[in-house]
Every structure is written in structure tokens, then in C-alpha cells.
Image (cartoon, rainbow, N blue to C red; front, side, top):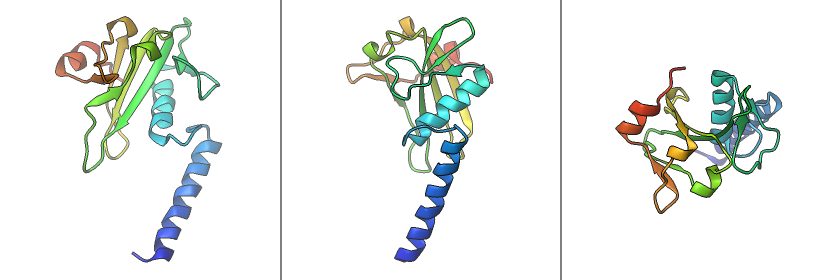
Length: 140
């Protein structure tokens, strides 16, 4: 691939990101995280909070319950097994939502875990087990 082909692809990427920002789908440079938040808000009828740097939660439901949303996307060469979550980070949220997207940006699963049930490891990561999936998976 020559430099002009690379630049052409990067310009397309810039155009795509610009359109997604204009449409309110993404708000920061974290495309996967922002898309996951937007997608969950649409699927679960949540209101995203205005601040992209909000401490402890990303969305609210119609009862005022707070949701921290974490998203991982698999690629052709990698499938996520952990979500970065610290106990301190979710103490202000009522629920942790974990979303895994496949390589084509489709939802593989969504977990809705009460924050008091979240047990991150010493590296502030939550490993997604079959037990978590069977107990907290939600249909969308």
C-alpha cells in the first residue's frame, strides 16, 4: 500500500468519525466505548449523561438508577475476556453494563450486573465467565 492510498483511507476514517460525532453517536476519541454507550442507551431506553468525563456512571434510567457502561469489541485477531473496572469507579453506579461487540459491530451479549455484585480482580479487571453470562445476560 502506498502513502497516498493510506492517506485516502485515513481521510475516509476522519469523515466517518466526523459524521458519527455530528449524529451524537460518539463524543470522544474512544469510538468503541462511545458506540457501546450509545447502543446500550438505545436498547435499554437510558439517558446518557451530558459529561463525557462523568465520574462513576454513563447513563440514567427513568427511575434515576445509574449505569456504568463498558464495551469491548472483538477483532479478527483478538477476543476480549476482561472489562476494565475498578471498585472505586463503579461505587456511584447502581449497575455495570458490559457489552461485547463482534468484529462486525453486532452485539454478542449485554450483561447487567448490580454494582454490589461486581468483583474486579487485583488488576481492576472483571473477567467474564460463563456464570456471569448465565446470571446477568439480558435480551435486547
